[in-house]
Every structure is written in C-alpha cells, then in structure tokens.
Length: 446
Ligand SMILES: Nc1ncnc2c1ncn2[C@@H]1O[C@H](COP(=O)(O)OP(=O)(O)OP(=O)(O)O)[C@@H](O)[C@H]1O
Ligand SMILES: [Mg+2]
Image 1 (tube, helix red, strand yellow):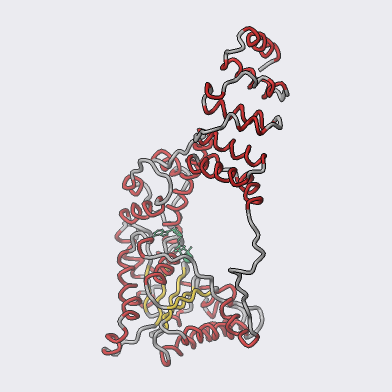
Image 2 (cartoon, protein in one colour):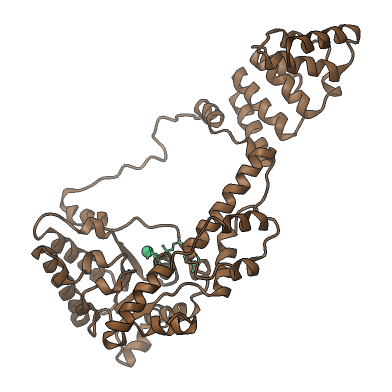
C-alpha cells in the first residue's frame, strides 16, 4: 500500500471512526509498512465484532508492539486454530507456558499447518520440570567380565518396532513358505522331532532391490517367537586379521546358546562374496569361517535358522548353496498388480487421505518395487503438504497428488531383471534361477 492510499484511508477513518473493516485495513497497511502507529489504531475496535482471522491479526500487532496483555483481550474464548496459535505466542510472551502449550497443541491438532517447531521448543524449554534424578532413574552397571557379550550385542542391529506379515503387501507364496519352513518348525518342535526333521538350516532370499526382502525378514521376526539376531555385517567386517572371523564365531555362539533363534544377515554378499573374486586372502578366510559355522550348527545345534538376503545372488559363493547351508532359496519378485494395490493401501495407512483409486494406480505402476511405491506415496505426500501450507489448511493426499507423483517416479526393477535374465540364461547352475525365468516368462519378458 503506497503512502497516498494510506493517507486517504486514514482520512476516511477519521470521518467514520466506527467503520471496523476500514480500521482493520488501515492497521494492515501500517503494520505492513512497519509503522508503529498500527498498534495505536487498535483503540476503537470491539473484539466481538471482528472475525477470528482479524482478531488473530490484531493480537499479533499488539504482541509485536510489546503489549501482550492487550493482545489477550482479542483472543478470549475462541477455539479457532488461527486464534489459538496467536494465543500460544501471547501466553508465551506473558510467561504462562502451560497455557501457551495448551493453546499451541489445540491449534496444531485442529490445523497441522500451524505447526512451528521453534515456538514449540521455546515453550517446552520453559515448561520442563527437572526433578533432579532420584526416582525413576536407573543406573546401568557394566561389569568387566561381560565384555564379550557386550561386544556381540554391538554386532547386532538394535531391535526395531515389530512388523508383521500384515505390513507386507503381496508375496503370499513366500509368506506361506516362510510360515511352513521357519515359523511352524519353531512352533511345533515336538512334531518335527518325531519325524526326525530338525528345525533350522538356511534360507536365502534374493530379488530386485526394494521388493521387501528386508521387510519380510523383519516381519518373520515379528511372526515367530524365536530370538531374532539382526547381524550388522558392516560391524562384523574388521580390518584386523582374524577379527572378523572371531566376531562371526561369537555371533553364532550367541545364537546357539539361545535357541530357537534366527540369525538374519542382510546384504549377505558383503560377507559371503565369491572367494575367487576377493583379492585379499582375509576375506576368503571369512567365507570359509562362515561356511564352517553353518556346517557346525547342522551337526551340533538344531534350532538356529540362518536367514540371508541379497540383491546380487550371483556374487554369493556357490558353496553357500550346498545342502545344510542356504539350501532353500526364495525369489522375492517385484509385486504384481493386486500386491501393488495392497502395498499402496499399507503405505497410505495413517496418512490423511481423500479419494484414492488404488486399483487404477496399481495398473499404472507395472514394474514398480515396494520401495518405488513408497517413493510415489512420499512424493504425493510432499505435494499435499505443499498444498496444505499454501491453503493454510490440511489438504489430504488424493488421486490428483498420486497421479502427479507418477510423472516423477520411475520403476527401478527393470535393470535388475535384465541382469538376472542373463545369469538365468547363461549360468543357471542347478536351476538356481528357474524362478526368475518363470517370472520373466509369465510377464512376457524372457
Ligand atoms: N511387499 C511390500 N509391502 C509393503 N511395503 C513394501 C513391500 N516391499 C517393499 N516395501 C517398501 O519398500 C521399502 C524397502 O523394502 P526392503 O528394504 O524390504 O527392500 P529389499 O528387498 O530389502 O531391498 P534391497 O535389495 O535394496 O535391500 C520397505 O521399507 C517398504 O516400505
Ligand atoms: Mg534389503
């Protein structure tokens, strides 16, 4: 607003001082120009005659002018989130942090676009009560003779919140296999023992990246009641000669000591790479150690199951496929159409959503991995957030956001399938890639 406009508005206001919309316009003009007279012009406004948005604005002007007590007069008894967020600032300025927090939380609950981490932190910093320790504090004593156990624990990934089969879309056949080969033997050991079947052994999952191998392993942990040891391979690999082998042995020992247990080696190729491909003698020693540990449990310990996952199965030493080692190999394929619809539903659960046609989206995402679909949903969520911020109100994710996101996300499984096809055609020893060939044939890509 230029000076001339502002001047004529001020003149008009002098003639009709009771015109509150004119007064608000004047205050807006002065406030925008950083003019201190904005707060003076508030006199003469009756709060109850104003809209919530105008009241929030006037209170902000008064707060900026350093008179929060007067600002409060414009915010009383109002639950509109726009007003509440200003009330939070005003209470904060007045030093009433409890009231500030309550107002902040009611505003954000009603309209998440009002979230303001800086304000929240400022309020919470003053609210926190330090009770000086004492009650509720637990002292952790680490005894010296326990170093080995502590070290082993460091080689395992911390437990994550439980995931179950319900969180894994599609893959019905693989779930059934896992149920039959992993979960059941652990649940009914007596029955298996009677038929002289040992629970345990090794299962290797392979497939294109992002199609749920790691997710499925975590869900297996959630499904079966066995102890689940998620091995952090990068921590097992040690630059010192003999160290990696020692760590690996300690891990297997831990698993044997607490059966039934499942050891999960994600990205197995890092540990079990082909011996001829590893230049250093040390890594080939590690492979040998791994192999003998696996053999060891077949002989001595039932109840330990080794679960491995990789997206480069051709880089795994073939010796790992021998009977008693990873003798069961499961192909985790890209999700088919119904599975994609199901995965989309899972991924959208818990997010604000409007009308979404999962089936139509599933049809348009052929070749997408679960991770690609996650990427798609995240991109759509970004769009909905941007729209929410623009409109100052929560806009749920709807079909338009999803379709717009489709233009940005590409499938990432094709490249893997092309590579796998070559291995399946030219080095399919023992029919190890038959499942890949079946998949390609079914999808007309062989
Ligand atoms: N079947 C599925 N159901 C639900 N979500 C899935 C599924 N597959 C993949 N996702 C989503 O994609 C993400 C990545 O999947 P995951 O890490 O299990 O892939 P991966 O097969 O282990 O890939 P990589 O070979 O790259 O390790 C998961 O966290 C999940 O959000
Ligand atoms: Mg993985």
